[in-house]
Length: 169
Image (cartoon, rainbow, N blue to C red; front, side):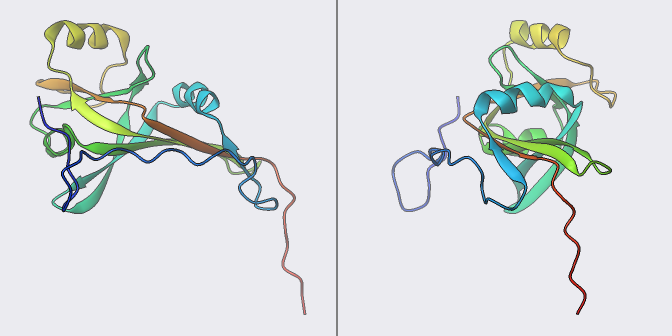
């Protein structure tokens, strides 16, 4: 088992910040509304793809992935055991983002799940996940499952707003 990450200059493990208190609209006139955790978790299964955001060689990396939510709302994806992502994220805090937008209607939503990622080592658990989730979109011979625990779940919805046109001088 890996030890939790420890920020430089401290002896305490890294922990995710607590979510700010919910204040309804982020700004009265921006058209976005914050989503609660349960609403975010209801939206995620509506789309087949998302993006995993992690650090590789001290640089941000973003990869599109297909995924599913497990019974405990963990984000689960399948990748090659030899992939750079699998090696980079195991035991690290990552973000996962999924969204859906209707360009014509100017509406949509975005959800971000932040939490510790872990490769599934138990063969029984891997078998259960293989039966429960969709197959990888890419053929994977040495496939492993990666779970992202939903420690922080945030989202925003863009509700239909009037089109603002610039004023001519």
